Image (cartoon, rainbow, N blue to C red):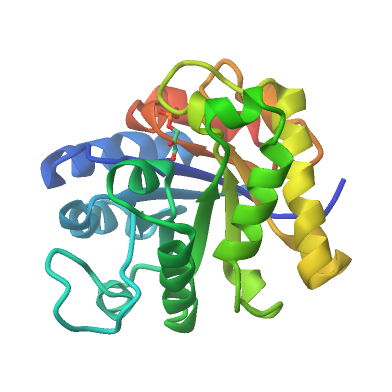
Amino acid sequence: MANRRTVIAGNWKMNFTPAQATAFIEEIKPMVAGKDNCDIIFCAPYVTIDAAQKAAAGSNIKIGAENVHFAKSGAYTGEVSAEMLRAIGVEYVIIGHSERRQYFGETDATVNARTKAALEAGMKVILCLGEVKEERLSGITREVVSMQTKLDLAGVSAEQMANVIIAYEPVWAIGTGLTATPEQADETCGQIREVLAEIYGAEVAEATTIQYGGSMNDKNAAELLAKQHVDGGLIGGASLVAAKFTAIVDAAQ
Ligand code: 13P
């Protein structure tokens, strides 16, 4: 077993008002208290971060953001900079989620720029990548995740990789109830690790946490997390239900 930190992260997406976030964190806080074999993070909508942080204060729950812009400041209406997130104590940020790529025009180039900006600001990045259904059916998953890994991490140093978590999220498994089999998840996470070894060497590749995301839930988490290359989960739907998310944390213990 490699000595990698297990990270169980929730991606709330566009869910939870500040009051709902407070109630959720208050509910789950005692349920996950003392469970420290994994890092527990919830990534929240910008306007909900403050309430979630206040509710999580003093607990083992960290609150992150769901995106960050690549510029330090300027005329980018609707965007939020890494400096702004750091100023309110946010350490973790999701970048490159497939919903950003699908609906908001994110490309590997913008994902790369956002990643570098976040790392330069001292943040920890959860970098999402993964193939769409047609790519898996065409047998080019390996090529797709390899290309995304290389493009998204271009210019990121081996040293900075200590602050990068990769989330392998097959797009066909997100929000669909379809989950990659543990074997598929392990195989593709392993392929991503091989690409990391190519770029950064074996030591960095072995140390990098690679999560699986895509309909991970209380029922399938244990099998997925048992796999050699699956070092955690990035969880959408099940991160909105305290009992389900806690069961995933338990599966990681
Ligand atoms: P679901 O768990 O709802 O499939 O979402 C996964 C995801 O996109 C996490 O970022």
